[in-house]
Length: 472
Image 1: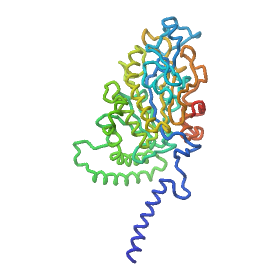
Image 2 (image 1 turned 45 degrees about the horizontal axis):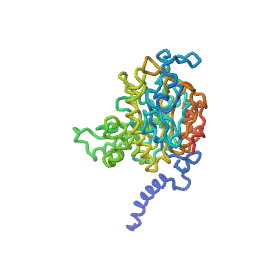
Image 3 (image 1 turned 120 degrees about the vertical axis):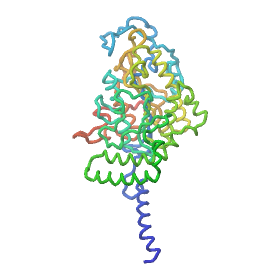
Image 4 (image 1 turned 90 degrees about the horizontal axis):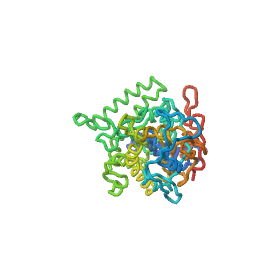
């Protein structure tokens, strides 16, 4: 055999395999199924590529943030009588309780927003408000599950996991789904809120603790393990891969081991990619100031929101940021039973500038055009007082909002009654918001299904209607 023929028959064959792999990744092989990219979507043309969700754990009060009701000011301190018997979660109805903050109109749309969130108020022309949300439970755990998974029971995949399952990752060196929990602790139900549920385990979330010395657990070896080197890790991964593949061969249909193998491979890639993404040193002073980094009141959420932007622009599909932790008393969440002005005041101050900074930064970089920003909470709060300074749970009417990614800015959908007590104009559930988010991503929510226990499960269960009024 001539040398040229030898090189071609061996090296050319390997090169062909490599080329086929690369062409397959880019869906350029004849007959290959196209990947669900931005311009094509899965079921119809998409308007958005990615989502960032901000979740207010503990129940942010709609009537102290975005749902302006002059009657609460006029009737403040009087007996509250909505014309029906009211059963509250913890208490008997108190008197009508006005918002502790002043209200002003903002933007060209003239949206009323309380002075609790002045920086976010400046962005109202980019936001579509939904004032007629309803929850199926007034208990934090089930209601938080519902907003995240579409069900009040445990065991169901989160919206982020569904989107990961549908669209996959845009960057093989970063996970499709990332969660930033509150550094003070988890919300009710903990990581089950961002679980992959019965979907393949590869769609579980990666938790990142921005600003900590070890932002992703076990990403790097401990300082004392000097015997661990890049070469030893490579050889260890090779052996693990052999054992895992042998184990998987005898357990067909079990996605957990396949997810574990993918996790090891992702961890190896993250060791290279994560340090660059998580390091904020390269950001300008102006950008850091925009997010409130350096101010003790806003530094934590500022770092998480800025890191979220860095992940989104590098191809992460879904980022979830939590504000509030279920860690008892004193309150470190939005569950303001005892003193709303104090608790909401602290939570709102910590959130407002970073959240507004994220909206501003995404828009300045052109990312808001194809990024959905989704703000929500598990339910609202009552217009009457609990004790003298707090508010009890209200599942009958609360506010969520969307921005970017094909939504209209400066609009409001639905309404509560004159008390901000019950949704009376076009009441909706999380199913409708989830259906709308999926629609903007190019997904028909009725066709995104997964067979589990004999049922074609979906994020929206048997419900959900796209809110067309919010679409640009």
